[in-house]
Length: 108
Image: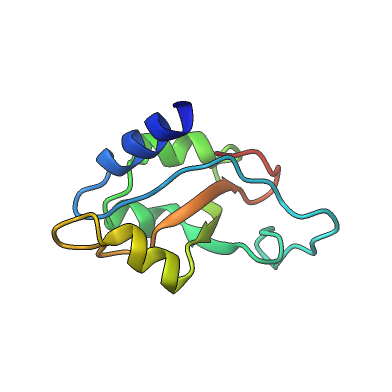
């Protein structure tokens, strides 16, 4: 139920977008990219995400070191198509499954 509430709450935080938030952790031994995100994660600037409807309050909770960069794991194209089919306009932005800070590994 908590995961369902987190998913619903995250989806309602966006204007015209959807996000499903789950607890994420880096794979053991994953090498970070130049911004500190582990292999398999995508680097996002928080200003870009805010410009595309993400909640600044939520992003501030994820960006623990305050450098304006977070890591996210987007859904695969097949998963995104299935998830977004429940919304009348689909999803206008990538759906990010997990988020974490780029340097300390803590996130949602």
